[in-house]
Image: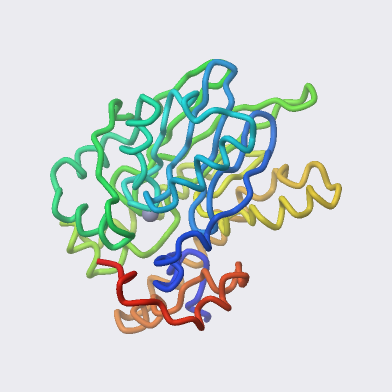
Length: 314
Ligand SMILES: [Zn+2]
């Protein structure tokens, strides 16, 4: 049993975090009105609704420049962002929200349980904000989403489904997009990592080991969703870059794969079953190795260069 997987340690090594420009990626069109504007570590998806843009997840604040650059390069103005939806209350998905709201005036949305958690546990969030680089900020969402809520703008209706486990208020999102007269259902699982399900982390969040069963039930809950295009809130969850490379090689429909949703959820189930058998020590070992290394080796040469102390993370 390998205890190394893409649902384990997703954070870039510190040497990369300190030089976050190494995570900048080209933006690109995915399918219909959906675009990728994320970085090597975290996905952000842009939806052109015809009546303004929806942004699904922001990067951390140090990576905001590359997000804005990507939006401009696709031919949009970041000020067209009307809604920002945050999948769950982890800094790698909301760190730049406040800055972006300041720049665009966008309205913000997050699951109500995560909204409440963030409001209540200020210090814990401050620690997390700091760990991912200076100046990340928590935020107060304008709209606290309930299970089944639909966020509508222009031609797009996004259904928000509560899938807790990774955090208490994770929301998964589903909507329909159209390309060449064909309709496709897009789906994204809101929080697929195990990092927050160790005994230690659960305790820190005031939760019990029961959260692990909650995590499993959330996978069951969305198993029957029909998804033609699976997005990932980390690019290595749906092989975003590999698919984009296939598009560039002429395979126009590389992002369309109706079987991927269940393959992914099954892998998540299997890996989680493995994870539940690990001891605290084994979990510790698992988190010493970042998945970052196996899927994007372009950054590895930089690890050899010493990083000046002045660039140390707080
Ligand atoms: Zn997370």
